[in-house]
Image (cartoon, rainbow, N blue to C red; front, side, top):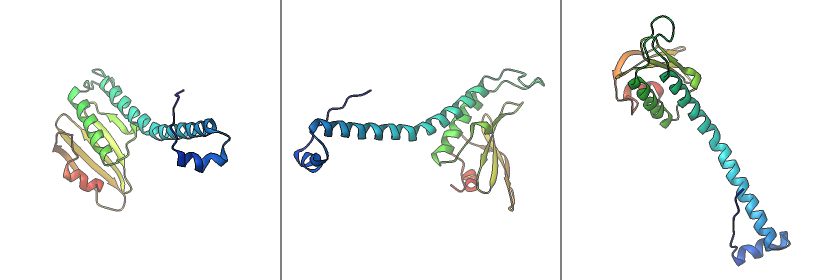
Length: 166
């Protein structure tokens, strides 16, 4: 528990004094108000932190996959793909694109697929060592795809921004 010291100005004390028995009671009330505010603020930040940790944990889990992880000759996940995945997720979250840790899937040839749900439908991104592929599954509209866009994964390519409407 933290202890706070408040210096109250005379005008504030005079306005709130009728509701309290003395300056100590005013100080206690202000301290409880501040603690409530800090706790509520921390609770609002916690889900974001937890979600971010879940995404990071899932990417770490994928980075730990060994050679033949699927029993059918799958390759070990390249370090470059892992770093590209982290960068791409960071780029998406800058645009407030929601990503669920369960929507990350490894492929047997060393890429990671990330499915992103949008109001139009799902966009599946495939993250490789130097390229980003995608295809859309939109209901009632024409779907788009790309086998690979050269990118550094630090920013979302313009073609992808158009599809995401950002």
